[in-house]
Image 1 (cartoon, each protein chain N blue to C red):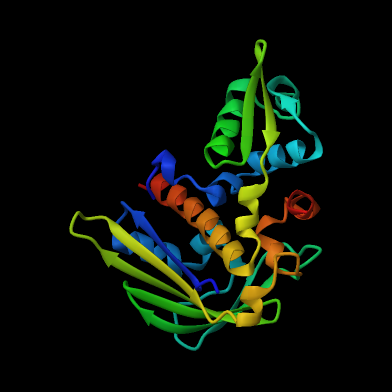
Image 2 (cartoon, rainbow over the protein chains, first blue to last red):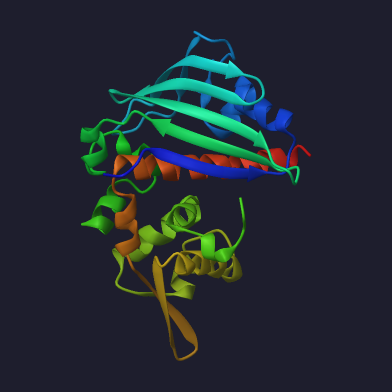
Amino acid sequence: MKPDVSLDFKFTSSIEQVWHALTDSDTLAKWIWSNDFQPVVGHKFQFRAEPNEWWDGIVDCEVLVVEEPHKLSYTWTSAGETTTVTWTLAEQSDGTIQLHLDQSGFSEETKARQGAIEGAKYAWTNMGAQLEKVLA
Amino acid sequence: MSNNHQERDVYVAIADPTRRTLIRLLAEAEELPLHELTAQFDMGRTAVSKHLAILKDAGLVLARKEGRETRYRLNAAPLKEIQDWVSLYEGFWKERISKLQLLLEENK
């Protein structure tokens, strides 16, 4: 079984800039989707993407952890599945910022399901039926 | 994120809409020469061949020379890697973070 999503990224911006990009609603809208996020524990918000054939485009979230500027965590409920998205920021000795993303809580069933299911394809909307064809 | 070519994987390769269109075009045809692919885009052949080079690095496209032209073919096997939900999210976040990185660069 595959592990949950665990990714590391490196930034040359300051930790404050990266934190701002993760927690400012307008900035978030530029790289994820439009949203009503607020960096307040317990705040419920949504990301709203363009709906498509497989997905209503809505992600329901609730803020779990806000530890400026090192840790941010929220639930991520979409297409009937709730996972937890956690961002961890760390300043490296060379002055760069390491951003770690962890998305956990996928059910075993979900992990095993193949990409043909509704919802899972949202990231590759443009590929749509073509992806299916390519993979056939 | 490092720009090291060897780290350029299938997620990054398909994160770009032009490259997804190239994959679709190649999926619909057995093999296509560069000029026929270029004709589908609002960009020059140099730009299109750069995108094709990225797909080639990710193992998604095979190229062969025939006479003076290069012909391209799809190799779909690496796409199987992104078939499950977790992998799709990984691809999604990698695409979004590269957007974020561009955003932060612009604001410097």
